[in-house]
Amino acid sequence: MDFASPAAIPRPMEFRDATPEDAPLIAACHVASWRSAYAHFMDPAYLAGGIEAERLAHWRRRLAEAAPTQRIIVVEEEGRPVGFACLVGADHPRWGTLVDNLHALPDARGKGLGSALLAEAARWSLEHFPGSGLYLWCYADNHAARGFYGYRGGLVVENTAKAGPDGRTLPEQRYHWADPALLLKGR
Image (cartoon, rainbow, N blue to C red; front, side):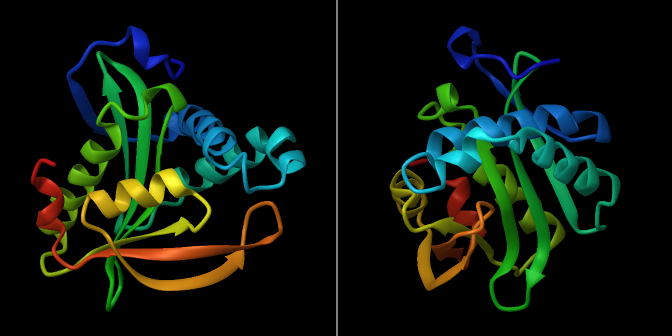
């Protein structure tokens, strides 16, 4: 099964837990998302290079060696994967459940997948880790994502710089939702 172009995919969205067999799908979505969203600030040679093999190895490992508090969600429209999120429940004593990855195929952006994935992350965190907030890291130069997280009620609680996957130090922001239930409300 391949990630499909969402232009030809009608709604509704369905969520399912990823299995080890989903590693190639998740890796392909991850690569497509990075190449689209990070092209203006990440090293072009890195993005054009062989990141497919690196992302595939990463997701094979994450799916095979899943921590008990990890959940990887695949979002599908009519059985076709168009995005995913990786969560780590109650990852941080202050900030709560980590949304470690949230990616949609480039053509799927702007169609509600990100909001739906964040809402599903909030539902899962509230059910399994009540009282835990929700947080994620976002590259400061990823203006579209920052606007989206702000619109969805995320508050910037920290600014830092970390080594990015391309080896360069990149500024990042921690977004936090003290009450993940806010993500269950439509905007």
